[in-house]
Structures are given as structure tokens and as C-alpha cells.
Image (tube, rainbow over the protein chains, first blue to last red):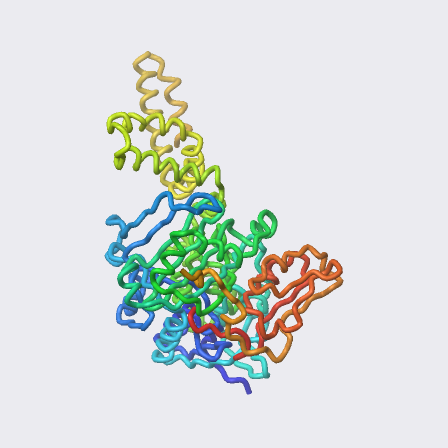
Amino acid sequence: MAESYDLIVVGAGPGGSIAAKTAAESGMKVLLLERSRTPGEKNVSGFGLTSKAYRDFPWLKKMELPSMRVCRKCVGHFLSPPPELDERVCLYSGPSRRISYPEGREFFTVMMLRREFDEYLAGEAVSAGAELRTLSLVTGLVRESGRVAGVLLEGGDEFRAPVVIGADGALSAVARLAGIREKWRPDEVVSVCCIDYSASRERLDWVIDDAAFHGFFGPGIGGNYFMCMAEGVHLGGPGVGNSLVSRLNRRRIKPARELLDTIKAPSCRNLLKAVDAVPREWQAHLLPWLDRMPTNIFGPGVMLVGDAAGLPEPIWAEGVWQAMYSGRLAAEVALEAVDEKDASHASMRRYLERLEKSPVGRDFIGGTQMRNLFELLGDERFFGELTEMAVDLFVAMFMNGQEVHSEAMARFLPILAENLPVLMEVGRIYAPVLLEAYSGAVRDKLQLLKGLGAIFSGMAGTAQGGGKGGSQPGGEAS
Amino acid sequence: MSDEVVRIDRFSLVDITPATRDFIRVDPQKCTGCGACVVICPMDLWKMREGRACLAEDYRSKCMECGSCFIACEYAALDFSYPPAGEGISYRYA
């Protein structure tokens, strides 16, 4: 006889554990399944928990893990094309004072190991009353009158529940078994390699301190980064281009090769040397990187969260906060479904509707342009010129000791004029993002202008003694 | 100064419990020899042999389960599922 639960969550990563915790706290009987020996053992990411997570899950503030390092400054290294990879601009910055919530104004992320974090969250789920079962690989789903009604494990164990949450990552078995998605298209994912280094805590405190994120951008290199934890440095990134397709069809460069090329940049290599970095682990993972919010993320009796749903955001492919947020939403919908004894397609649809309206869904506004930014990061014509323009404008004008100051400053307009093509390229990317974000508001304003226009032309018409012509546009506007 | 930071021996930097059954399958009838799996594998476990993709015999003790080959194959010639629970890659510093 199969054991019964109110909710089964497959995968004890951040999405699964938050779903299990939320549901268990509401009094549901929850089973949390994990294929590895300990939660976090199989999960890779160059991981900084963003301030958003501390805003939305305030209880995280009590979490203390040995690998933690707070990132209060981010550093962008803008490099010249290979083989020199010379540093042309370095942007070193704390968070903007205009961020809308206090945690966001204080820090960017807290860097830590997923191995520690995932274990911590799974512990939170267990403390809330969820039953964690490790060494459990889901190989089948139980179906009942067209609905998912439980899971089958390799080895034959069967568990039943009216709702199953698939939190089993980019290669979700639940998505596949439920018939939601066979697999991602190559242009929907990115393959990321990482090298983890051990490093001296003392040196990291001197050299890095709280500037724990360093991104390396430039023609032929763009998009790789390293992030520093308490006693380690993690180098990773999607490299140039933004999907398996761009890699396979256009560049045919191996992701491993790209990552190793980044270390050849003197600014990257020297930082690693300065903190006594020694390679200790080679890692690889695949992540969904969509430009539009996916809608195929639920079915009767089943919901997908986190990477399984394809929720990493379109610029940086950040996915942990998204997994946690969607995990909590899915658990709330599961609770309603169990209370109402209705886990139908229509009932599960509430999950998608709420997710679309949430910050996770809204982060996909203008997503197509944002994701394509990464294509431009590898483009010498675009990115090289933008970097050099920044040097021309700021360094040559204000930090100039080589020439007469007034003459250097007089170059401002010619520099802008000379770089009109590249500035227009920036506008071409930026405008559609704004248009999409504010299209509703813009439509309302246009409607208002049209209305005002009608009134004015009506007045003009009256003044001219006509009046007839003025009534027409007014009619259109209503 | 030594350049240890740029010399990476990938195979010595992973901890893998060899899987006790196969978890990647290739259908030679469907393989077109496009080579996508060869390009994308982070461990270089794929080779081209007689115009067809060929997986390393010892992949069960070297594969990192990223699934990139499975997604990269546009001809459904390649199937991937997870190895048995508790087997395969184990990350200590991820």
C-alpha cells in the first residue's frame, strides 16, 4: 500500500525546500524527495544570494554559514580583445541609493556554497515538519483519472499525494514524466563551467574584502565572473554568446576552453594569485536561460518551480531567489487545492497567474533585448567601441594630465558625434525594453493627448467659426 | 611565478562515484554526426568515430550529469536520465 501525503516535492534544492517548508508550516503532510545523499551535493552555481531573498524571506537573516562573504561592492573589468585582454576600464561600485528596499541599498549579495545553503534550507523544511527522504530517484508518476497523483521511485517505492511539485532542476524528470516538456531547445539553455579555488581568508580580506563579485567583460571574453566566499573563489560563467545554439552554430568553442581563456586576462589571473588561489573542484551545469516567462509550468496535479520551470532571469540567469519565490507560491496554491479538493488544470493555473504578476514574472519584461545583450558583449565592434568611448569621455576629459584641460574638455561633443552609431545601437536595445515596460502607461498618455488634442482642435474650430471639424477627432478618442 | 591558477586537470578535480547502470543512450540510427555533443561536453567524453558520435566507455565514472549533450542533440539520437540515487557526481565546493 502506497503511503499518502498532502504534497510531494521532488528535489531538495532552494525551490523544493521552500515549497516543503511553506506547506509544512501550513499543516500539510509533506514528503520532500532528493536523489543525492545530502541536499546540495548535486547542485552547482556561482552562488550569491541576492538581497531580494532577504527582503522576501526575512528569517534568512539568522542564517550563519561558514562560507559566507557579504558582497557590498561589484567590480566590472572591461577588457581589450584577446590576446592582450588588457584592462581598459574598471568599474568599482556599491549598490545604488535608489534601490527601493533597505537590504538592496546595503548589499548586493551574500556569497556562499550551495552545499551549505541547500542543506540549511532542507533543514528548515524538516524543522517545519516536512519529511525529507534522500537517496530517492523519481522514475515515474502515479496517475489517476488524467491527473498526477503521486510518484514512483527507482526500486519500486510508491508515494501518493493530490499535488506534486517538480523542483528537480533544469533536466526535470517531473516535467518530462508529466508530459509538460520533453526537453529544452538548445537556444533556451546555457552550459556553464566553473572552477572552484581554495584561497587564503586573510588575503581575501586584504585584497577583496567586500568587493566579492568581479565580472570580466570584453570582446571575445565577455560574461565570465568570479565571486569570493570566506575562504574560496569561484570562477564561472556563460562566456561569450548566450545559449548552446550560439556556441554550437557560430563559435564552436568549448565552454571549458572559454573559461580557461578568461584566466589569461592579467586582471583575473593576478587577483587569483594575490589570494593564493589553488584549484580544488571542476564543475559544470546547465541552466535554462529564457527571454520570455515560460507558461508551460503546470498540469493537473503538478506544478514546476525554479530551474525546472525555466525561471532564471534573462540578464544574469540568476535562479535561486526565483526558485524560492516560485516554490512558496506553488506551495500556497497546493494548499488551496488540497483544501478545496481540486487539483485540476484550472486550479493549478492560479500558480501561473500569480507568478506572472510577481517580481519573478515581471523580471521578464523586455527579456528578449536583455538576453541578447550577452551577444553584444562578445562583439568587438560594439563592445570595444563602447569601452573606448567611456575612456575618451571620462578619462581624457577629467583625469587628463597629458594635455591642456580646456582642449581635452572641448572634445566632448566631437566624441559623442563620432560614436553616434554605437550610441544608436544602445538605444535600439534600450527603447524596446522601456516601451514594453511602459506600453500600458504610454497608451493611456496617448489616449489623454488625443483627448486633449480633440478639445484644442474643437476650440480652434469654434474660433474659426467651423466647429464641425473639431467634433470628429473627439469622437475617435472616445 | 607559477601559473598554477591556469593549469586545470579536470579529471583530478571531480569526485564521482561510478554509476552502476547506464544513464546515457545513443541511437546510432538517428545520429547525423553533427558533432554538437563533442563541442559541448565539459569533460570531452564524446568523440567522432566513422561519422557517428561515440561516448567514452568509462563515462559512468567521468560524466558530470550536466545533460548538455542531451539538449545539444537536435536529432533525438541521445537520451539522458539521472544515474541511480547516491551515485555519480558529488560536489563539495559548489
